[in-house]
Amino acid sequence: MEKNNIGLVSAADVFLYPDSKLGPLPTEMHLAMALNNYSSLQIILPSAEKFVQFRVASADFTVEYYQMRAIPVEYNTGDGEKQGGAMVLTDKLEKKPDYATRLAPFKVYDCLLKSPDGRIACADGRAAVYICLKVENGLTAGTYPLKLVAEAENLHYELHLEVRVYNVTVPENTFNFTNWFSEKAIVRMHKVEQNTQAYLAILDKYARVMRRLHQNTFYLQFDEQCVVDREKCLFNFEHLTERIKVFLQRGLVNLEMGVLLDRGNLPNKLPDMYTADFKCALAENLNFDSLEGYKFTVRFVQALAAYLHKHGWTENIFFHIHDEPDIHYRDENCLQARRRQYYLAASILRKYLPGVEIIEAVDSAAFRGGIDIWVPGTVGYERQKKEFDQLISLGEKVWVYVCCGPEGYWLNRFLDSPLIRNRLLFWGCAKNHLSGFLHWGLNQFPDNMDPFQATSCPNHTGIGTNFPCGDAFIVYPTVNEVNISMRLEAQRRGVEDVALFQLLELKDPFVFRKLLDQAFTNNCTYESDPHKIADLYEQLLQALEQKN
Image (cartoon, rainbow, N blue to C red; front, side, top):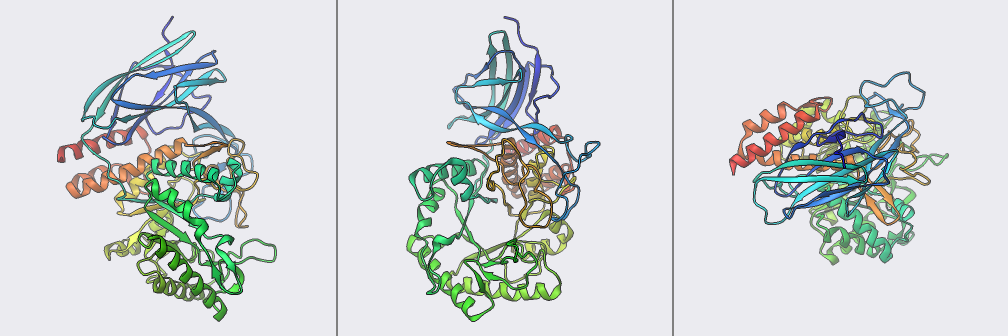
C-alpha cells in the first residue's frame, strides 16, 4: 500500500472547508498542553473509500475522535458596530468583505460528531477528522512521542506527534462564564417532554458540554409554571429543582436567574423595545411601577427566597432584573424612568435575598448602585473603558459580552469570521482584568430552525435583519446527542487561557503584560495569525512552568 502524501493537517485555530486546498502532508508535528486540558488537531485526507480509520495508540492519553460535518453559511455578517440594522448582508455581494473568511454562501467544518472508534465517514471524496488528546490522570510533565495512523483500502498516512506536556494545571472557576440555553429548543430538537426523565437525561448532556467549555454559571429563566395563582400572588418553583440538581451535580456552581421586569409588547405583538414603563415579567399586563406591581413582585421574590432557602441554594445566586436596561431607549426621560424602576426592583431583591448578586448586560455605567456584576458589550466597554476600569479598581465585577454585534473586524464568534477570534475574545478579558464572559446563544433555535440547513437565526425584535450566522448557537443537536463545534472548542481554549494568564499575573506581572501586549490591543485590534497565538500560548505554558 502506498503512503498517502496529500491532505491537510492543522493544529491552529483555523476553520477548514470541504474545498480547502490540499497539499503535501507533514510527517511530524509538535503539540503543547497543560496537565489538565486538551491538545488537538484537524485533518483532511482525500479518499474514494466510504470510511477512513484513524488511530492514536497510547496509554498516556485519552483520545477523542470527531467527524467534522460541513455547515451552511448563507450570509456574510455586516460591518457595523451597533445591534440594529444590517446584521447580515442579504443582498448578493460582488466580493468577499475584508473582515470575513469567505464570500457567502459557503460551507464550513464547524459541527463535530463524536466517533468513539475513530472511524470517519468520507463525504465528497474527503475524510475530515478532529482529534483531541487529554492527559490520563497521574501522568507527569514531559515530552511524549505518539504516532497517528490513518488507513483505508488504498490509503495509509502516519503522523509522528511530539506532545509536550507542561507542569502546569489550568485553575477552575477563577473566571466566570455563562452561555444562555433554550429549554424550548431542547424539547423541540430532542423530541422530549419537559420535566421527564428523558428530558433530564438530555439536560445532563448539555451540562457536560457546558463543563467542557468551563462554563460555571447556568441561567434558568422563570416560566409560567412558576405562577400558581396570579390574582392571589401565589408561586411555586419546585418544577425547577431537578433541573438545578443536574447542573450542580455536573460542577456548575453559579445559579443565574431572572428576569423580574419585562418590556411588554406592542399591539403587533413585537417587544416594546423602547418603553419607559416596565411590566412584571410574569404578569405582562401589570405595570411594575404600581402598587399592584410592587405587591406582585414582592410576593414573587419572597416565595423564591423561601424555595432557595429550603434547598440550601442561597449562595452564588446571580439575578437579572431586566436585560440591557440602558439600551434601546427614546430619550433621557425614558432612561431615568427605567433607572428608578430598576433600583426599586434591586431593593426588593436585596431585602429578601441578601447576598444575591445582580448581573446585567449594559451599555454604560449609568445604573451605578443597582448592579453588582456589570456586563457591557465589547463596544460599550471599549467606548467607556475608563469608567468600567474605575469600577474594577473599586472592587466591582465587570464581565463582557457579545451577541449579534459588534461586527466587522470586532472579535466575535460568527461563522464567517476567522476561528481565532473566538479564542481572542478571552485574551481580551485577561488583559483588561474582566472577570467573566456572557453570551446569549448556546442553543437558541427558534421554531423551524435547523442549524444543519441554515445558520442565520431569525430576528423577532423588529430592529434589524436576521442574526449573523452562528450567533445563536455553538452546539448542533441531534435527537439523542448534543454535538460540540469548532467554535466551542476555540472558546474552551480561550477560557483556559484566561485562567492561565490570571495565574501568570500573580507570579510575574511583567511577563503577563509582555505576552498579552503581543496579542491584544483592543477588541478590534489584535494579532490575527493563529500560529503566532499558538506560539504565545506555549510561551505562556513555559513561563508558568518556570515559576513552579
